[in-house]
Length: 107
Image 1 (cartoon, rainbow, N blue to C red):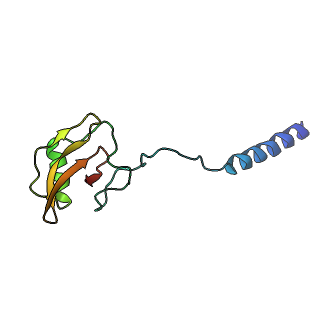
Image 2 (image 1 turned 60 degrees about the vertical axis):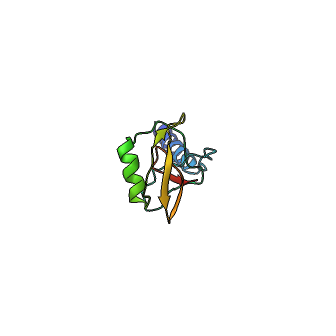
Image 3 (image 1 turned 90 degrees about the vertical axis):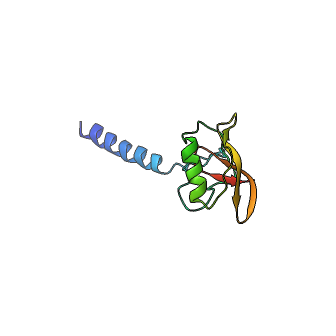
């Protein structure tokens, strides 16, 4: 019985060590894991990222304004649920896009 207990304990230690030694899984996704919450307009070069948009139009306008955009024109959700429209920043009016993660792209 003692041998069986020792074997089980040793096996448990080895199995636990092997699990810790596994490399981190590789990801091929271009979708960033976090929502853009910093002062930067976008947290990823992949923006705008298509996905179910949780922003209302008023929230999308506010986020653009919070990031220095003004003269925000009509905003419309495209087929990828990305808010698109025009807005001015740094004295230039240009197309803008806001994705579900909060990433803003001035195109």
